[in-house]
Image (cartoon, rainbow, N blue to C red; front, side):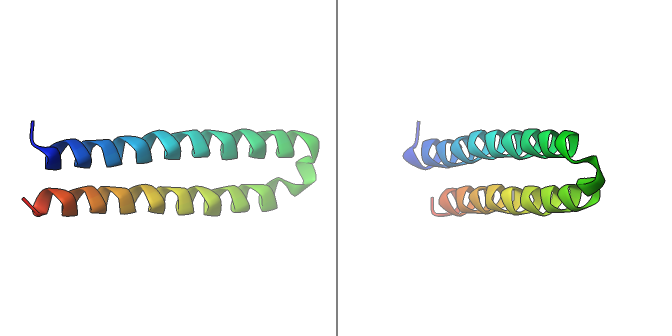
Length: 73
């Protein structure tokens, strides 16, 4: 197997594992926070959505980097 394919697959695999773990932690903590303070659910939900958007952006950057690695061949 060519090294470019392996490095591209490895980069997107690490990014997706890390991103899904981070999104799970953020969502879990948001649910816990809403359960403790239901009156703040709107603020907590908005903050959670912003945090998830930043995590997804990092995953998309890793996807772009893996495409760049593949384009160098």
